[in-house]
Amino acid sequence: MASEKSVPDKTVAPNRTQLRIGRLTKAHGLKGALKIELYTDDPERRFVPGAVFSLQVPTGHAWHGKTLELVELRWYNSHAVGFFKGVLDRTAAEGLVKAILWVEQDIAELPAEEDAWYDHQLVGLTVIRDGAKVGTLTQVDHFPAQDLLTVKTDDGDVLVPFVKEFVSAVDITAGTMTVTPPPGLFEPLPDDAPENAPEAGVPADLDEEVEEN
Image (tube, rainbow, N blue to C red):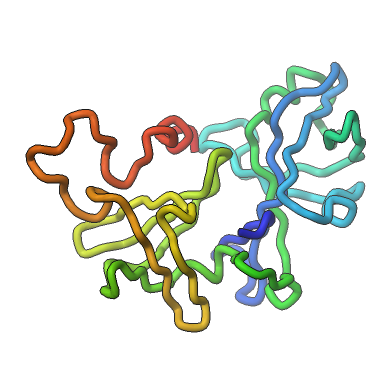
């Protein structure tokens, strides 16, 4: 999957999308710098002085609904470190840890990659299992461990980890996604299923991250 991820947003024009290009992971030093986990193969173009990023943070967060402007990007031991306008000390930087950075992009300018898709290409796909439709892909969420797909079915939403083990094929032209989920993800487990089986649709290792976002 492409390192940069896009997501439909009703606040942007129809011919534009938003790209996830990085995540702030840790305060660096005492002057407000933050280490950045890059989700782009072109940081020299994305992270230039004056670049403005939308922030993905929990509702109620002090930075919710705000933007962040880059002052400078530096490299320390091969790690990207950003300095941002208005983030002047370590305490302010620590308040931004885990924030995800987004930018707007013209859809026509998005590069095409083999076996890589943007969110706007995935949302709306018909989800197929064993040759039959089981639902429609309605949302893609991005977490540090992996991405999570929301599939709308007749019985409600099902969460599917976006990994090859569970998603065997994506055909944008045909408008389909083929899934090979384990038992219990799209249907109730038998009565004799192990009591400690993970809840259908929510991988055990993603519970904490889903709550945080």
